[in-house]
Amino acid sequence: MTRFDETPTSGAPDLGPLEAVELVAEGAQLLDVRELDEWQAGHAERALHVPLGALANALDQLSIDKPVVCVCRSGGRSAQAADALVRVGYDAWNLAGGMQAWAAAGLAFVDAEGAPGTVI
Image 1: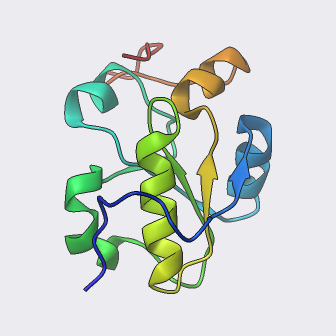
Image 2 (image 1 turned 60 degrees about the vertical axis):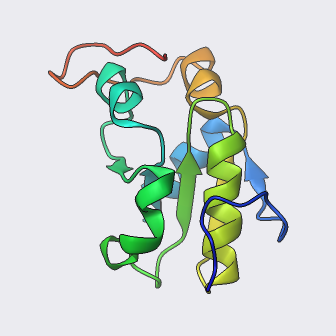
């Protein structure tokens, strides 16, 4: 069985935040694999939240027919998620630099109440 928390090995491709926004606009799923407190502090509005440790049991929340852009704080956990998804048949990408890169690119994100978010 594939583990969703192991070191990346399959080489899911990286993309930057502007490429991620474009891919999501074209129908890709945006998957945030950070912990709940990180998600509540700030996340992209269209993202689905599934912490990395819960991903193996939450695949039914993702469509295998659409690309998946994985994001975390800095890109490490999302690389693990993207690699694991690729290993089980998804077209998955890692957002290099994570939410830190997203924020640095000036892209909007919100906290749990819908106010402007922060990256923790």
